[in-house]
Amino acid sequence: MNHIRLGVNVDHVASIRQSRGTPYPDPVLAAFLAEQAGADQITVHLREDRRHIQERDLEVLRRTVATELNLEMAAADEVLEVACRIRPDMATLVPERRQERTTEHGLAVAGEEAGIEPCIRRLRDAGIRVSLFVDPDLATVRAAAALGVEQVELHTGFYAEARGARRAGELERIRAAASEAGRLGLCVAAGHGLDYGNVRDICLIQEVMELNIGHSIISRAVFCGIEEAVREMMARIADAEAGRE
Ligand code: PXP
Image (tube, rainbow, N blue to C red; front, side, top):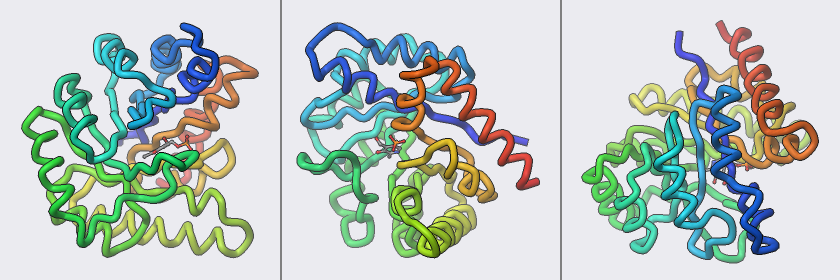
């Protein structure tokens, strides 16, 4: 049986570097060590304001990542040109707002197809698989499927932030969206706000086959190193996955 793939997002290694303008710490080295520890994918977000990952990081990662490179990006011309030149294995389209601390919502797909579709086509023509980062909402999942993308990544941020009874409701929304996406033939990924505690319930959802996790892994790596932090997350995922068989 396929196991749940772990994509490690190394943006925050670059955040530390950019905060002081030093050449270190290097997200490329972080990606290498994450792969050595068993990560299945390296994920980075090239933001319009370049607050963490730089174009050069992406160029070097394209040459050094031995697993898969997943580029999170806005559906905007400037970054689209970069993506088509560098050719990550997958592009994950996300909405982007300059003022936000991190991506706050999934892509509004229904009603916005005319803006997104040309971007998907250009990525596809460059040989790049496309994933849409979407809120766990049935209408949005159906609109994503209608655009013919390979994958949706379900936004788990609302679940991660919810407390008490609300959390069960948010989990149920993800479960329903994952089930619908699976029924429509989409690969199902999930991400945002996942940590060593809350990842379990997401892994128990049958359709989820990929997780993209950054902040919690890089935070733990400060104390125990990135390899140990990745191994620990992989162990949690494997443990939960055993529970869904
Ligand atoms: N997936 C997507 C689409 C994201 O935008 C992000 C944040 O860059 C992540 C996953 C990782 O989120 P976190 O850093 O909260 O684990």
